[in-house]
Length: 105
Image (cartoon, rainbow, N blue to C red; front, side, top):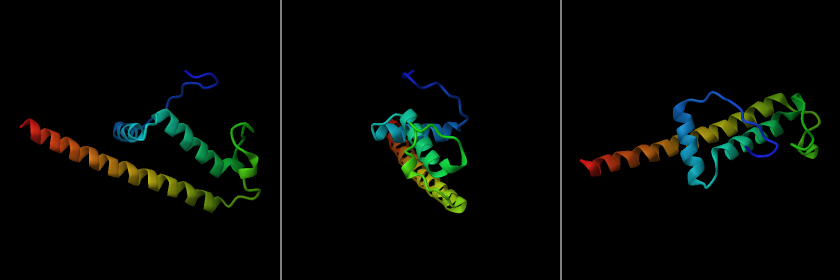
């Protein structure tokens, strides 16, 4: 465990976890790092609605009067991109597995 961080538990489907892990590793990243970055991006979009530690988010990045609809649309865009990437990665993984199975026969 890194200094200043704590272990957390979340519920995630095995399929999503596995695809995300493969994608992160293919990018030379850790899944923990991807999750932290995603949470940071989420906080930066939704920050005006919750309490924040000043060390986590730069206050200059926050809009003084956020538009809730815009924040939701930005979150949807982020999630849509992530899902699209995960689907492409899963497709590539499935094709690779199919090719490898064909070689074993």
